Each structure stands twice: as structure tokens, then as C-alpha cells.
Length: 105
Image (spheres, rainbow, N blue to C red):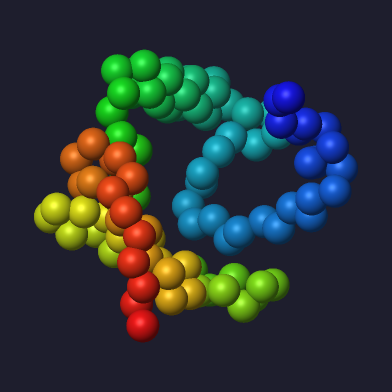
């Protein structure tokens, strides 16, 4: 059976992450420029998805204050490493395909 989004939304607690800069247009009273920029960004993203270009990600560390988990993202010339606590997940740098797992310990 399919994933039940309605049920997941009813049970899940959504936690907002801090954003920097003007990420998206306001919910109401958006200017024409804000609307056009948002539509251009959405169209570019849809095109990149359609031609199967992997998504970009920047190196960072995220410390989840709710669960206490630490997530590190490390970008190398050959792979992208996503480390959740002490578990490593490797992805091919160019294709974005999952390449394997490992352990930091």
C-alpha cells in the first residue's frame, strides 16, 4: 500500500529550522518580483529533476536539539558523506547514487 501522508502529518511534530536570508516569498502580499523569483526557482528545480541532475549540498554540521543527534555532511572530490551520529552513508559525488555505509568508530 502507499504511504499515508495524512496520517503521517497528523502524528508528526514539525520543527522549523532557522533560515538565513529571504528564502521564500511571504504567504500574502508578495511583490511581483518575489513571485517571479519563486516561480523561476521552482521551474529550474523541476527541469534539473527531469534531466536527473543530482541535488547540491554544502558541507555542514547539524545538531538536533530535540533528539540530540549530530549530522555531519562532508563533500569530497569523490563522494559525499552523510554522518548521523557515528554511522556513515556514502554517496557518489557526481551521480548522487548511494554507495555504501560505514562507521566512524
